[in-house]
Image (cartoon, rainbow, N blue to C red):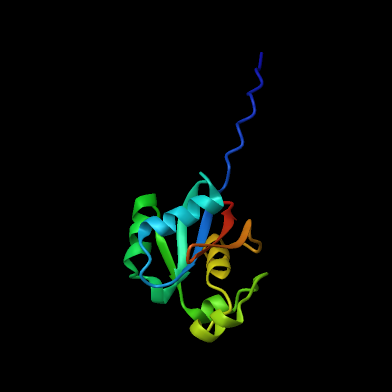
Length: 131
């Protein structure tokens, strides 16, 4: 006699969260923006442009979430097609997108789950990680 196994519950995907921000923002502002946009979603990493790699607030936010902080050169980010490019960001950083492009690169995804949202000087975008 064989018994059918009940279906496993569907595990929600984790998210790669792209972060664009002004310099000097505290971790609390970054964490607030992430939760404002994503609620209690499972975050697997934060991702941004390389010039923010040592930004204290961003480093602390990643540590608070217990996730890695991934960084990308502007040239890498600029090669990612995004739905909401910014001429201002392109002029300032050499890439038309930080949050959206970084989320897509970090998730190895072709599509965003959450397009960019700005909250208090922090721009958040997310892409699901299906691995």
